[in-house]
Image (cartoon, rainbow, N blue to C red):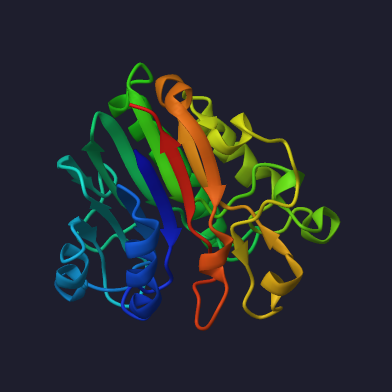
Length: 256
């Protein structure tokens, strides 16, 4: 089973690129973040025509997540426990082919020390509580999405420039570590310790052409899922060309 995660940065704006990618890459499951549309406006028909079932959890203009699957989707959950109708749409989960998948669009945090930054840390601890309560590590558990955090300096094109800035600060990395302490592992690092593997490049600095990026899109896996995982790759081709998302898709392959 091939599972992709992609911050698509508006599924409707990116549709002319997304549909050809979906046909060519043909992952079994796709977890999308930052879909930026209400569920009623999600381009469901075009995606269903390619053989995917769609489960979306979106809102107008901002945020939004979705799970697309060519396999049956079961046990869909939306949001975090305690969320209200006005809370941001950042979490959707489901079980697909025995894998408990949780698709996350983690709060960005804007800048270190701001109220939004503190909200990010608290939000991540709520995700940790959900995982501890509802996602047994004896199962194939997969958390994926845009985490808006680098694990360490290997994930940063210029560690000194980014030192203690948003996405790279010590408290953010500690919050991510508290989540992995539930029993999850960074799946990419099963296969490589290399630096220079990035998933996001800033539009404003034209960072993609110089590979000045960050790795902030991750697969976190429980021990059974990690054992079944035989590869994790970043689809750099999908980040190039005209009007791309600022993120590249990441694809994990699991054996049955």
